[in-house]
Amino acid sequence: MDTQYILIDTRGDGPRRTGLITLNRPKQLNALNDGLMDELGAALKAFDADEAIGCIVITGSEKAFAAGADIGAMAQFNYMDAYKGDYITRNWEQIRGVRKPVIAAVAGFALGGGCELAMMCDILIAADSAKFGQPEIKLGVIPGAGGTQRLPRAVGKAKAMDLVLTARMMDAAEAERAGLVSRVVPADRLLDEALAAAEAINALSGPSVMMAKDCVNRAFESSLSDGVSYERRLFHALFATEDQKEGMDAFVNKRKPAFKHR
Ligand code: CO8
Image: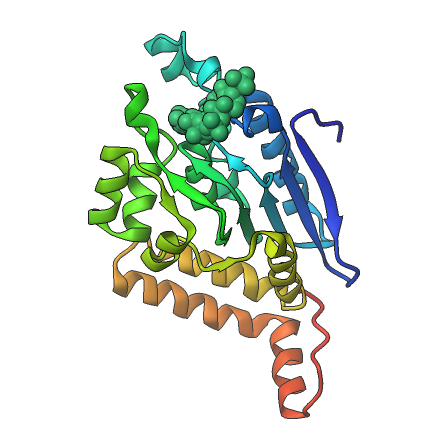
């Protein structure tokens, strides 16, 4: 796939590899324009469909994961431009359809749509240089790709209101304390840590990984009893897989499992 705004690569040498997507508009701090979002959507779809890929990592540059949607591209929009979604607002929810785990490896600015993109990922690993924020209010708008919904679910109402209403940035340590990110690592270790997490997931059973992701996401969409019941159904379903036989037999016989991802 020819790309202008992202770099696409694969990493790892096991039977399942990691799909690596690097946002690459460095001069604009990876501001998210239509071209970038189209390429990102297509790359995610291709990796999700590729049997040889177990996990996907999205990263940016040292200075910015992404400093938000492209403000220049939006500046002259009228209501119908925004509402019809032909530009800038299209393609933003592609990532939600990805069934394999997606890890965001965030260094530098993750602002506005950049923070929203990171929050759409399944695991968020931050460099100690990372800065998160939803500064849209300073532009006379509000977050438009889930920031007002995913941020309070991640950090609670108090901090979400603080960030969304004052537009202040939160550093990596505060983001970790608040529960927005799962780990903070030195900036020069960021990609290695994210790829190591991806490798660990690649070695596991594909069906159980996809169903685990599905179940955790369900926790945000359902009542506790519905979520637990959904989890129970998928737990039962995994007993129909070859990998469950292999995983449990390997444990009982004290050997390493060789998952077939079926
Ligand atoms: N859009 C376009 N260009 C940008 C953006 C952006 N979001 N952010 C930075 N740039 C450009 C700057 O214009 C500048 O370009 P140039 O060199 O040509 O002047 C270049 O990147 C470098 O930026 P700065 O010189 O400003 O660098 P600083 O280190 O001084 O500051 C900041 C870095 C603090 C990140 C600053 O650039 C900034 O505040 N950026 C804007 C952050 C922002 O407001 N983000 C929110 C955007 S709105 C949004 O994301 C809504 C998402 C809704 C999606 C809805 C989908 C359905």
